[in-house]
Image 1 (cartoon, rainbow, N blue to C red):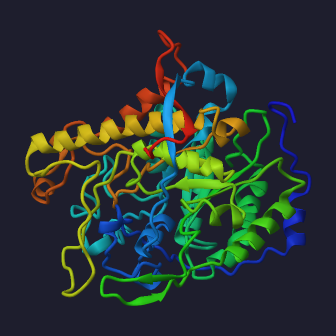
Image 2 (cartoon, one colour; image 1 turned 180 degrees about the vertical axis):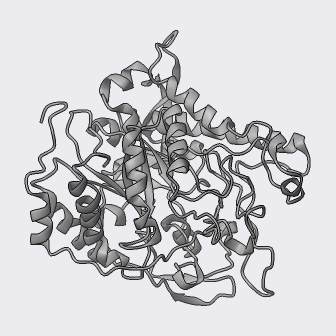
Image 3 (cartoon, helix red, strand yellow; image 1 turned 135 degrees about the vertical axis):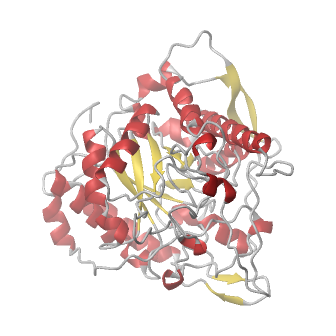
Length: 487
């Protein structure tokens, strides 16, 4: 199929009806708890699996594997020197380049009187928020068109062309927010896809129906006006979906040595049934369908029928991207390692005696930040800005490396974590300048630096670098070859 050729949509809804898509409506189920930062940070206030009644999202697949005692893989690759394949060359390969940069977006925030999510972990909005940072828009409501309009303008200013909505099941609060968000994003030429959460223990067995529902409800019924269908290098189009908590261990052991089943564990064979069913159902409608799992399991992930990995966790630093990209390529998987500022997570104010909870540290790692000092808040902002640039450069370096899967297949997926996950402290959505905080807010110890838009500005600068002509062809770490020490 040539560049720009429309994707066949000839009988998509009929296909869905023949497939028998029927999902029960579910309520709003998920609240996030910050994911673990590394093995020593995996003790948690709540069980490792999702607990909808307790508003606990559960560990990512990667954190769950670490909790279960499974070591991270250490593929034996080293880097050599190669010309940086960025800039105009990348823009020339992908005519819709901005669509390949995808903000993780969380549609779970509500305004007064409930202040959904802003009151997480016993916070008391409107001044006391479930975040170390006061957003520039305050404790906003994603149901407000004015709010989403401003967010769309910021996304456009950053040069990003797509968002992935955190999705918690048909009929959930987050699902009901989708139409307005798609209307506004579509008006601003921003496309929308979905990151599927583990909203029920049966989620794995609903995976195919969930994706068919999303394609039908928010793609076909809307005439594909705002649905993300990125083009591969050959011009062919197809949807991309990312899953959270997909490749899980069957059991988990807590800090007291108690081992219990992981409630939403889905066997690999069940995943394969679901992914095969999806591809068989959609093979006449799209040249390709891309399914990504948040996993570094290089055997189980392809066995489960996923096309590749999309790592969520910001504790995987950019210095590790090369080695894991090499391991994914050996397994025939495509990969996406995110652009991120690190994380700065809120903590519970009261911890029950005897619990397994331990605070998670700020990342990137730093020595002794004193948040009451303006100098330390600026130092933390500098570290986050540096992480954005480093992770941006690292993910593009591996995705454009001709020795690896993505470049060989002509695909590019750059997830940005995140636009507005305020609980974990990695939102790139602008926050208030420190000088604009109210005295009551300063007393609560927020971490806002002097320039609240610095994260989005850092990303925008990197995005602009993809289209402006370079002064010279720089040489950066590039090709991966087996045989050297792990990075």
